[in-house]
Image 1 (spheres, rainbow, N blue to C red):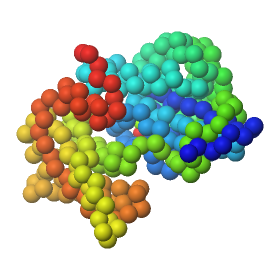
Image 2 (tube, protein in one colour):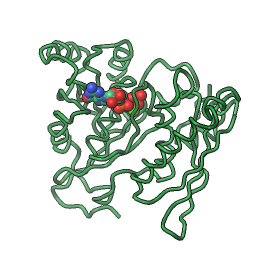
Image 3 (cartoon, rainbow, N blue to C red):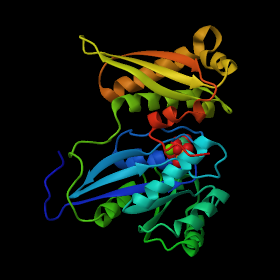
Length: 304
Ligand SMILES: Nc1nc2c(ncn2[C@@H]2O[C@H](COP(=O)(O)OP(=O)(O)OP(=O)(O)O)[C@@H](O)[C@H]2O)c(=O)[nH]1
Ligand SMILES: [Mg+2]
């Protein structure tokens, strides 16, 4: 399975935490060098923990991309925020990602207060530096370090890749000594059917607006390898109301068709196989209150 232990080998879990939309998933993808987690301009895109794996020298780095931390209102919000904090509690290193253009937001303040209880060494990652003047960053770094004692600070752009290599080598030097947990070429631990559902959800987020993306979920129901080398994938998109179903379908089915075409192309690229994708939109009034949906997403079902 994993690589044999050698004296110099290192391996560790690095949790990427932060407020919604600060660029955690973009950073996870940049660190892995491949798309393992979906990214959209909308806040609260990531719903579950996504592990992306990279090798740097003798170190294997397991990045845990987490849902953004914010003041939760609904049950699903609580599950998402809870999973982010639990991954911080389990990690060897915790990277707090900040959107440096926004400065310190209310969500950041809440996170900074709670970070004190996290045992692992913490590092500060000021992201989106492509959008700000460099001098402003020093003040921001200073202010953040007054709240929490960070082991190191980095200024990066996950989008352009600026500073990402430095961050990665620092992490490689600071994860604990020990054997690798995954084969050298593995970049994710997510099953393909889950990756495929996430890709479709990304297209939903890109196409639909206001509350609708947050009221929907995607699951892969069927994954069938065909004789010609292609895969037949059937997915369900859950929404809460008939009116939402109509919007997802669009006039004459135009919206669902576009979502399906975009998702099919990306899934085919991701799995390097031709894909036949079939989407069904189902109304499940209370999917966000159904423990089974949480199990599918790999989230704990909060009691309330
Ligand atoms: N300009 C710029 N945009 C960035 C950078 N990193 C991420 N973004 C953009 O910020 C938006 C949010 O990125 P995500 O990676 O989805 O953010 P996230 O923190 O994972 O968000 P949640 O999953 O919702 O918590 C996307 O539109 C990204 O393209 C960066 O370094 N520079
Ligand atoms: Mg994300």
